[in-house]
Length: 432
Image 1: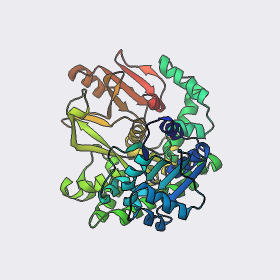
Image 2: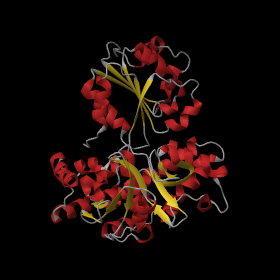
Image 3: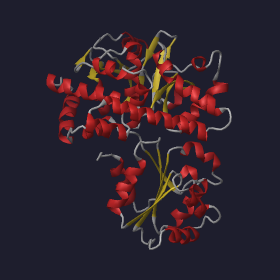
Image 4: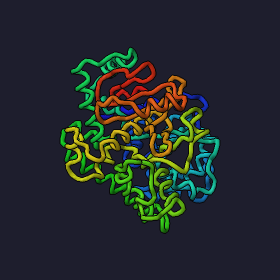
């Protein structure tokens, strides 16, 4: 059984005396259903679970009357003996994107308050356009991702005390003992290949068979394509699929800024911009926006027309590549994807830690992979797939653009280039 951080967040939500109905967003197969059912079983006398994709007939409960009395009366017909009083029951509305009327009803269920309500969906960002009245102000929100690196370590048998031991070297800015460094890099490479999709992680933990992991990952990718075919409308179907399939090629380029011409020669945002947004709303990709200046506040000086695109789960990105790529990564033979894969995993880690993604470039000659707010300072983060400690771009940013701090993430051990730039083992991105 995989341990997920969202369980603690759900407990915080439940213990808030003023909590509302909760909406959990997240891509397919990240573990939303399992986590909510596990939480519900442990914390409520009753759990009533409605999956609108598996049981379309449940949609009729919300079709005509959105009032709480009407909904609970009909639920009692579907679930004889169910009790709805004093928040002793959790009502779980799963795959709610397939029932827009249920989304509208969340307002009235929140006001009523006789049961706790959690709704989850894989394509909620897509389905909002079909909701007649979204319950603004009447719902709490939470986002769920595939397993982060720490959760992967737990699944691999690494205890919290061991992770705290490793973090101690980060906090003290000391070199990690060689045996620990080698083991952490091995686990990190496994995480790159396996990713964080729960079924893939559990299969790897149980079997150590990468071929089985790849089979699961490609099934998930096929589900993503099926979702595009099912939920994208009109010409968006072909365009969203084309954008999705172009991601490995985008990241293999020297300049990783997303180029619509890679999707289709001489194309533009006018044709494909909406398709990329569809993939983001479906929880498949992350955007990393260009900064006009390498300074805070990031949101205030970012250019939303220029961006890089990363897969939200790096294991799925690897599964999009040809067979044998997994072994190449484990062996350190990354080829043209060398920088892209390490960038994607760091972007994935930052996003799961709640960090918005930004990068900086100037005149096609100066580029910094990421900028994050760290210790209250705009911090340049350069990702390296080798132990090369040269810092030309970093030095230029510090000397010519007012950047005060830089961090290089690389496979090697801790070190300093000077008093403003330090080198951290790449897996320590989880601590930033």
